[in-house]
Length: 111
Length: 115
Image (cartoon, rainbow over all chains, first blue to last red; front, side, top):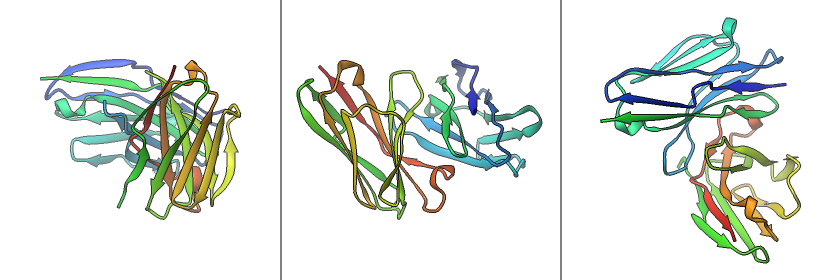
């Protein structure tokens, strides 16, 4: 069975703070893919990153960075110097033969 | 063009109505998906089409009927819906030959209200 856990239901920060969104997954598959999506108030899901199970390199894209650790089955997402436009619901998802989204973390960045 | 479009944006229907949701993509993707998302919940997969053929039906009630007329279009026909079917309906597409393990690109959704 595959499962994705995002334990943080809601996070509120003040602009320019750094924030980390946690994602823990469970799978018996050796090959799988992990994703992060952003869902702003407009409703559209925006793809942020894909990582496959064989690639544990961390990635940085501008203010966004991702820390993938197979040893702890975690795929955490950090936003550096947060901005109001980062306010959204963020979903972690796991895919192999099935696609499972975590429950989502609602991030509010206050000015 | 990396867009998935969905129409209408909003739909209000009665329980006896018949309506359709439409989704279109022009990225050459050969897998298309319908998801249902209730408020404050993650998206739930409903249907998957791969190469215009239905490959996954996640035990969705027959009052929802998907159709894939060609590789760019995906419809969801609605009939005799219940108020609990009110939700955001999201369409997505992904690259060919990868099916569900490739990143999916989502449309803006249709917000459906059933009265």
